[in-house]
Length: 173
Image 1 (cartoon, rainbow, N blue to C red):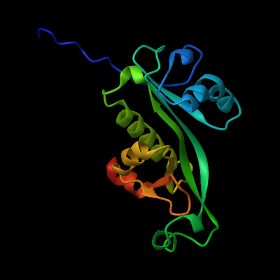
Image 2 (cartoon, rainbow, N blue to C red; image 1 turned 60 degrees about the vertical axis):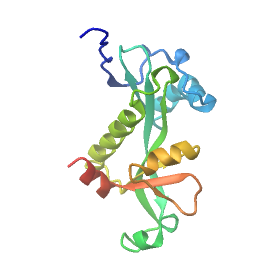
Image 3 (tube, rainbow, N blue to C red; image 1 turned 30 degrees about the vertical axis):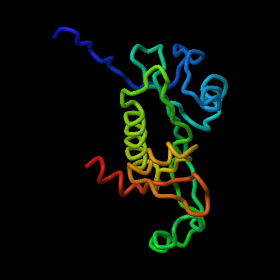
Image 4 (cartoon, rainbow, N blue to C red; image 1 turned 135 degrees about the vertical axis):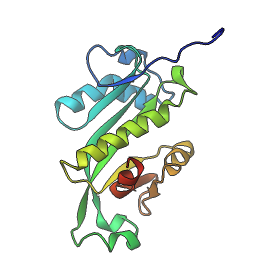
């Protein structure tokens, strides 16, 4: 086709030394700095794992981090909490950070990153129990992004949202 350019083929990889972290810029200095200076250390300390979306095993088009987490039962909406348990805390998985490079804006990579993260959360929940996925939305745009996938606000914690694992089961059925 004339004028047709193939879209790059993206793959997910765990963050490694071959990835060009210094070139990554998503428009949020906190997210850029985390990837550059802290993500590798968090992995070494088993605090979180960063997954990279890349077209060439060097360029970082986006990334997300996953870690285990727990949610206080009192923080969950009462109508949901009363059906769960009498324990004070319940297991969850945290998508601690999710960012797409400004160089790849408009390609749908935010959704690709989120779907891969959610799928990994679901698969892992079959090995290590997790009732929900937790995210922290940094601004109104992030809130709108997560809301469109069914995330529910944690009433007592501003900008914290959750998606029950049962929703993921249906989403990936």
